[in-house]
Amino acid sequence: MTVSLLCIDCGRAYKPERRWQCECGGLLEVSAPDIRISRRDLDSRLADRTFPFSSGVWRYRELIHPLIADDQIISREEGNTAIYSHRKIAEYAGVDDIRMKHEGQNPTGSFKDRGMTVGVSEAVRLGCTAVGCASTGNTSASLASYAARAGLKALVFIPSGEIAYGKLSQSLAYGARTIQIKGNFDDSMALIMQACEKNDVYLLNSINPWRIEGQKAIAFELLQQLGWQSPDWIALPAGNLGNTSAMGKAIAEMKSLNLIEKIPRIASVQASGASPFYRMWKNGSSVLSAAEHPDTIATAIKIGNPVSWKRAMNVIKGCNGVVEEVTDQEIMDAKAVIDASGIGCEPASAASLAGVRKLRASGVIKRDERVVCILTGNMLKDPTATVNYHTNKLEGIRPAFANPPVAAGADLEGIMRLL
Ligand SMILES: *Cc1c(COP(=O)(O)O)cnc(C)c1O
Ligand SMILES: [Zn+2]
Image (cartoon, rainbow, N blue to C red; front, side, top):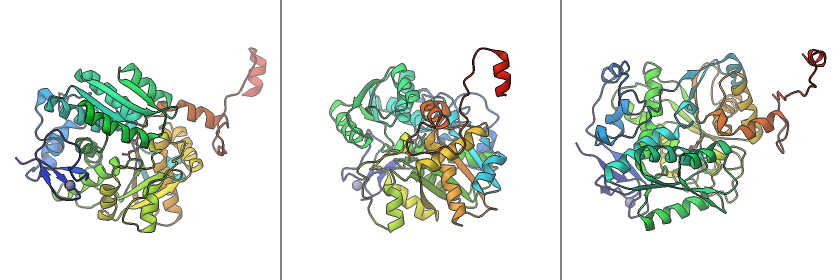
């Protein structure tokens, strides 16, 4: 079996060694061209409740990390996330068949666990003793948990004051060395890359090609849940663009293995305050120019200089996809609709639904097309944003679906008048 790391810029191939970038600076991609697997092989594993096929990532292990041995896998039975639909969401989007795959149901509350189980397992396979990342919150929460499970040291750089409390608390609680950088995510990213190089720490941002391999499992699991029948669209929020890259790679692999017949179109949705990828796509530019001061309430996608823009652009072109942007107002109203349908998600996740609604309004998505939104993170990650929305405390946002708490004295009659 040949497994190599291929540079997407210069084409150079490396053995699967401890490396996360090409010498030319280009991004690396895992290539395992001899793998063969059928729907029947994969479907037969669904009844298996034992390790490692009980994991919604390692169920697809040949397509994710063919070299890893059982005793190197650090898994928390990630994945196996539910797909929901609700009349309110369909009405809001203007699409009849729209479903939400809830990646917030992963062990640490976001899809990052799918990439992290693979990244940390790879660190174990390589014999590393420490792992690190820069993060807007969810990557660090996930890294801290999986590193603790593996007995590895964890180093986390986060932008000071810009992390939702649910996420910061996880990084601290799971025992990561947490450094709050006076700067934004892009500053933290540039610094962690140098710190990892200098201190022999294995870098586990989504620049690491094994993270992307793990995140492909969102697509494998989704398509298997749909009986291998592709939807017309898959919509997802876009920040650093690792997820867009992983989704596209997974779809291309499933197509070439004949696991699926049709290529779904990807709609990659950015927050308008942090939308360099949208602008690149809209202007037909061949290079991304970073956004200097990214700003959005959706902190998970508050990124001005996404590392994976090149592979993500290849993905969008390869699947006839689109890139869209949505305002914080649109994000928070879409979130309120998802929340009030009993599902719930963190702000960034709702960019997917907000994007679909906008693309439906402009006629790009048709009413009778089948759409799946990826809800990337759990509602409890950022309770501050939710409470401030419902109590009308978000600057520049007028909550269309506010459900504020009502104050009452401790007497039953007074309370009865309020009901
Ligand atoms: C990381 C993250 C994103 C952005 O994913 P990218 O791969 O960086 O584009 C979106 N939503 C949530 C909740 C995240 O944690
Ligand atoms: Zn190269």
